[in-house]
Length: 211
Image (cartoon, rainbow, N blue to C red; front, side, top):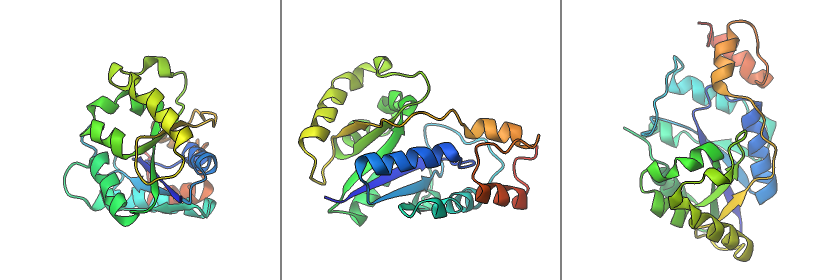
C-alpha cells in the first residue's frame, strides 16, 4: 500500500524544523511523498503577516529541492473562504483513491482537534501522524480523544494496509525548537538561523520581515 503524507501550515517562513519533521514523517511511515500545503484562510486562527499567499507559496517551493520526496500543493490557497482540513483531505482522497493518506499534526494542534470542523469524521477517515511539540504530552489529551487515540494507535499496528482512515502514529523524531514567529521577529536584526539558504535568498530578494 502506497502512502502519501499531507503537511499543512502557514509556512511563514518555512524553516529547518519543517524540513526535519517532514523527513521524519516520510522516513518513519515510509511515505511515497510529503505534500506541503500552505494554508489559505484557516477558520480556527488568523494569519497576521504582511506576506502574500504567493510569497508563502514561493518560499515553500524553495525547499522542494531539499528532498526528492517533497512536493507542494496550492489547493488551500486557491479555495475561496475559510479552509477546513476535512475538505482538504477529501480533495486529496479524490486524487489518490487507492493510497493511504496521512495528515501531519503537532501535539499542540492535536489538543485543539475537537474544535476543528467535522473532526469526528476526520478522525474516522484520515490517518494522523503526531509530532512532538516541546513539553506538551499525551497526558493533556482532551477527553474527546482519550478513547480514540489508543484504538487508532492499535489500528496502525494491526492494519498496515488499506486506504481507509482511523490510524494514528506518534513520530519518534526529536522536536526542534524553531518557530516561524521567532524567525520573523529576529529577521530585521540579521538573525537568519533556522532558515534554509534558498529561503533566506528569497526573503532578502523580496524584502520580507524587515519591520
